[in-house]
Image 1 (tube, rainbow, N blue to C red):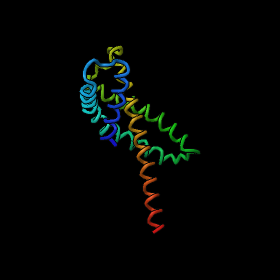
Image 2: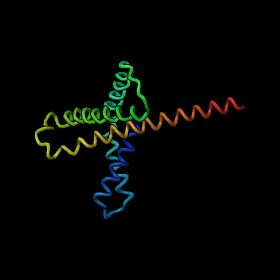
Image 3: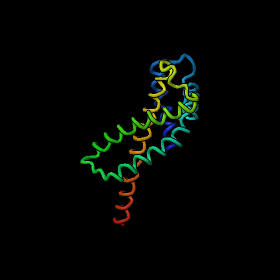
Length: 148
């Protein structure tokens, strides 16, 4: 998941950037350059911070034994947790990169916090989609075996 999420994040950010600032150059070249830049920057954050945060959320929810009435309620709670996590992980990462000078000029760095939120939500929703897809695949495979 941590290796797929930066690719999807790059695609989402490229689409947002292209919609905001259409390029005059080759569209495909700008896509690959942007995707590689985002992937290289965000993969470390996803691998270290994203996996750790996801593990902590899973452990927290299992320890608290929270039972959600519907899957939608669970998704709302997870979305709120991952928005917070995206801000927290990205803040830590940016503090490390800026050597502690991150908060000296927020007018230039405030937009970087959005990347953390978008990245965390991409990670969450991609994870949930893959979990559902795998569960459906297992169910279908089990039904096919029983039918034979």
